[in-house]
Image: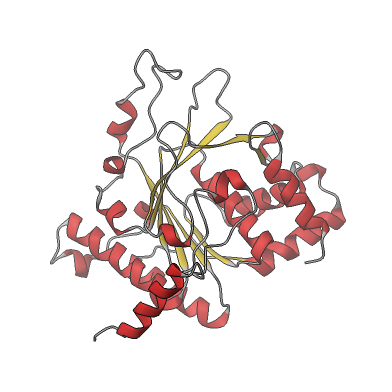
Length: 304
């Protein structure tokens, strides 16, 4: 099938006239300059194990749900659904779950029910089964974003694997995920772990974080750099978990933005977005201000 040439030229004309539709903003300049939510994008999120990449990802998803009423399908095999719902409630209220009032608890539960659906992870899925299920959900409940957390929790399809090596299998899986995104105008956020060897690479002695593992690189993705090649946007989430004072600082490195015309760009190498966990891990602040937390509260106080 050939493309419609006129449609593509129309897109270029819109870019020339500054009329191209940009990705969704959060009205938080520290984030919006580098990252936007874009429907139909296939995004890769990389981080070392136990550095909080799922927590940061869920918080960003929640912000987009509040700001733009985006809806999310969540497959998170490493977290029970009730623990995710609990964390979202704590984010919404900026309080530990046992400090949330009954009225607010019920209000937050309703908001989460309206904007998030969770895949039952007591069953195992191949990537094909998960995509097929996700498309069925979209027919009944139209949503905007799909979190797959993490990729290595999907079981291998033995029938497909018989004719492919591991590299070819992963390439086919990510290619089909990209097609799912374009076909349904849904953004997949796929989390991946860094290879174990990446933890051995430390900052040099002259660095502020000397002796601590560096943020993982594209080549550190478990399974290889092909994942980054297939991604529209590539994000690295890093935290210096063993640092005596800065262990609460979460660094978001935007390593790749495929379409700059619709907003976003890579963060400078040594100047990632920094989000600091606030007390009890119920939100984040930027540049010493509870910017995200305050924006969240303002939206919650408005009618849904």
